[in-house]
Every structure is written in structure tokens, then in C-alpha cells.
Image (tube, rainbow over all chains, first blue to last red; front, side, top):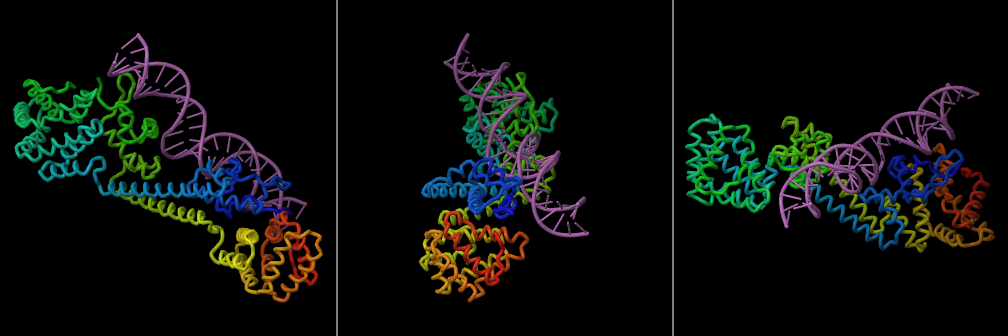
Length: 258
Length: 258
DNA sequence: GTTGACCTTGACCCAAGGGCAGGGTGGACG
DNA sequence: CGTCCACCCTGCCCTTGGGTCAAGGTCAAC
């Protein structure tokens, strides 16, 4: 016959597990109560009140390490701390809501990694009759560009938009797409490269971007990564690129090597 | 001169730390990329896309252990999983919002551990002129009762309400409150105990509660815990209780011992 | 040629408990 | 009286999603 509740009873009342109560003891959040003659902890009502206070704060997301000081502080500091906790909760809710929005976009198959404007350009490509595969390739290139050289991403995108607004350039792009399935030794490749070079030189705006790369320390590496990405899957495209670069360099355009 | 981004670059782009990327490698969420000749990891764009996918799901709270299977599964299972994740997020938001509400109540000094009806009774006590300390004592007793014998909490509360509706009983309660500051040997204590016993016997409803305790296995322990709680701080109250119990037992009322 | 920023692996640390082992207690039932 | 089951005790390792520290290798720049 002993006074006090057992650990299981207080735990059940406070809505926590026995393990949790012992954890709080170990952290010093709730004092260890007296033991009965068989070593069981026996709790009185003040222990219970304390446990529920701790539980309420912990449940609201206050780190256990802070709770002790909070409960033992004066009521004015306690009130201030509660304000703070509430602010943190509100932030967390907003954050989760934002994540949910992102997830919804993901579920809807939206393009997560690109801004609205880039998505519009890609949609335009699809409308213009470029196949889904080719659009996907462009999308990846844009993502890469944004990752590697965010400060020139805009001009990269502007170049694409400008090209898409020019029927002649669109026609050339479509021919490039078709060229991906050609043999790497196909003589038409050089023909196409020459036409492309002529077009780019006629409308220098379309060439603006590579120059901006130069401002970067490891420009060549980044250029190579974007320009040659996925070329292993289309040898003809690699060859076309090579030929185009040669044409441009021949007339003095400065293009990074590799 | 090597292809590919370093781990720091992909990490920065994906908005995670270098350590996190390596963590994902160890869990098999993102394949280890090729190494350059000095052993550095070198990432291509597919790695980056994968990393961002993982990051998006992880950020939404999907456990890392599930993400691999999710991304490698078909799109229909992926879509279903996204639904599930979104549901979990919504639940979590609701939970946090509820916690915030509780915190607000706590900050406003509200009585968290008691239902509305009990709070009303306590407010009534305050209105009737019982001091804040005494009301707080009653509050603790109610909390204890609810924790220990939830099924008789209602009748415990009903008894309190009934007592507060009876001016004679209220007068006796006030005298009990005053008695807390008396000397434990004060002869007025037995006088008061006799008056209380007479009142309780005259209105048997006020005595209903202790009988219900009997239905409990360890009734006596629980009764003692509630009835004698905080008595160590007011020896006169302990003495008064003792005397009252003696009076009641003397006329045959069955009260648990200790 | 040295500095500073980056990379490598490995080992340990954190919250907030969960799970399990191995053993002691208490009350109820037969 | 024994036996059963639920509960209690301590102590140890496990978890998730990384952070931190150590000890050393590498790269680009001044």
C-alpha cells in the first residue's frame, strides 16, 4: 500500500509512453519521484502537472532542451517564449503548405526546375512541331545552364526565344533535330553546319551568349558540359557541333575549346 | 580538364549540403557518378535531375527509405504515392494548427487540463469570493480526479456544482478555506467537521461520489491521492479531513481507509 | 610556392525516443 | 500455494537526416 501513481498511469494520463517519461527524467525535465520499497517510481499530482506542461510544450515543437528553462523561468519570459513558439509553428505550417504546392505541381507533371518563361518557350517548341524527345533534350540543357551559369541563363533563354521567333532558324533547328539520326559521316552535316553558321553570323544576337561565358573562371568546362551533354547518344549531333564550331572559329568567333 | 560538376556544385544547385548528397549515395537514392583521376565525383545532368527529384520528395517529408522505390516505380504508382504524401502533409498541417491553438490557450492562461464545465465551476468559485489560491487547489484536485478516475470525474464535478448552488454549503466551504491557516489543534476544527458531516448527511447527494470509487480495484489508493493531496502544506486541512472522516464513519458511511 | 577553397573517407554526435534483453513485482485466479 | 500476466526496473543498441571533426589529397590563383 503506497501513495502515488505508477509510471504507466501518469504516462497514460499525459498521453505519452512510459519510455518518454523516463526520457524526461534523464533530461531533468521532470524530477524523479520517490520510489516505493520495490523500486517503482511513485508519482504525485505535482509531478503529473509538470509532466503535462512539458508534454504540451514538446507537442508544440519546443525542443526538450529548452523546455526546462522555459518552465522554470518567470511568467513574462514564459509568455514571450510562447509567442516565439507560435511564430515558429506558423512558419512551419507555411513551409509545409508550400511543399504541398510543389508536390501538386510535381504530380501534375509540371516542370519543376525551370521558371515560367522557360516553360513557355519549351511549350512553344512543342507547338512548332518539335517532338517530345527533342523538347525534353532542350529542357535538360536549360536546366543545366541554369545550374551552371545562372547569371547567363536569361540570355541563353532569350537566344532560344529569339530563334523560335524566326521561321528560318526554326527550320534549321528542325533539320538539326532530323540530323540526330543521320550517320556521323553524312556529308549533309557539313552543309547544315555551314548554313547554321551563316545564320548565326547574320544575326549576331543569336551568338551573344557564348561570349558571356568568358566572364566565368572555368568557362570552358561549363560550356562543354552544356554543349556536349548527351552527345554520346547521338554521334551525328556531336559531329554537327564540331563542324559548326569549326565554321565559326574560321571566321574569328571565339569559342571555348572542350 | 574533366567533364562534370563537382559535388559542391550539384549540392549548391539542389539546395542541399555536400554531406547530404553523399548521404543519398550511401542510401542508394542517387547513383555514385564517375570519378575523375583524382577521385572527385563528377556529376552529369541526369544526376542533377535525379538529385532534385529526391530532394523535392524528401523536402515534402517522404522518408528517404521510400523515395528510391517511388522514383523507380511506374508513373501510376508514383502518382498514387504523391497523393498519399499530400494527404500526409495536409494531416500534419492540421495537427500543427491544432497545436498552435492549444498554445494560444496556454498563453492566454486557459485551463488546459479540464473540460469547459469544470472551468465554469471554478470560475463560479472565484466569483463567490474564494481566493485564487483556493480555486487553484480545487483545480488541481479536479485534474487529479480526472486522471485517476475519469469515469467518476463527472459525478465529482456534479457534487462541486451542487455544493456551489447551496449557500449553506458555500459558507461551510469558505470556513474550510479559512481553516487552512488555523493551528491543527484548534478546537474549532472539530466543530467545523461536525457541521460539515451534518450537512453532507442531510443532503446525501453530496456524498454520492465516494461510493462510486468502490467499483475500482485500487480505490483506496486513488481516493487517498485525491483527498489528501497537498495536505502536507496545510496541516489544519489534514486534521479537518481526518475529523470529518471520523464523523462520517461514526454514522456508518463507508469511506476507504488511507 | 604557398594560400585558401575544395575534395576524399571515416568515425562520432544530435534529438526524441523505440525495441529488446534479462530480471524483479504485484495482483488475480485456480 | 503456485502460476499467470501485466507491469516495473536498468542497460544497450537502433532509428532519421544529416552535422561536425579529423587527417589528408587536389586545384586554381596570386
